[in-house]
Image (cartoon, rainbow, N blue to C red; front, side, top):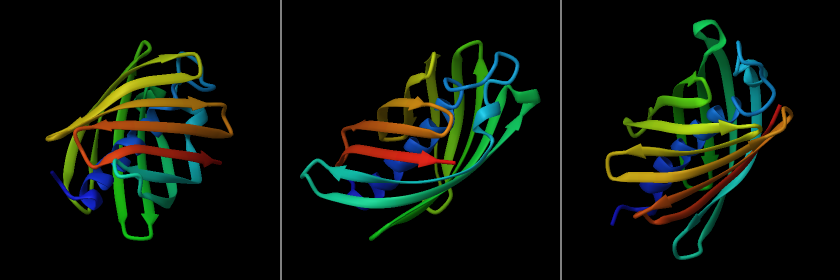
Amino acid sequence: MASFGKIRIVALRGAASALALSATAALADDAHPFAQYVGSWQGAGRVESVKGEVQPMTCAATCEEAEGGKALSQSIECKGRTFRFQIENYIVDQNGSVVGNWRELTQQVIGNVTGQVQGTLFTGKISAPAFSATVWMKADGHSQALRVLPTGVDVAKVEMVMKR
């Protein structure tokens, strides 16, 4: 089984991707599904291991629209007591279905994101070699709540709230 620290980074990287995806659900119109997500965000959260160990983290993100508002480019950095990671995401809205990719710069891990947007809720899946997770995200325009539930790794749950 992989170490908690490395898997935690992968899980949180996926969580960042999910943050970007949730924006499509929030406050945007059909022509620009990511309009309300553009800008700078900050927040806090926690990572829980399968053994019940909890580590708090803080995060900051910057998001920009692309492809005439149908895509979002995101950069996020999260820090905890024993870890730090940097993630880049690129996601595209395809009439309510969201597809994209992400990469974690410090560990050089690459993965995919797929999901659906319904109202203010995004549900989806993130994946990379030897890693997958279910993602739930709800946004209201001023804050975003995220839950990532990985499978087959040392991390049981990642939760985060980010605000403008």
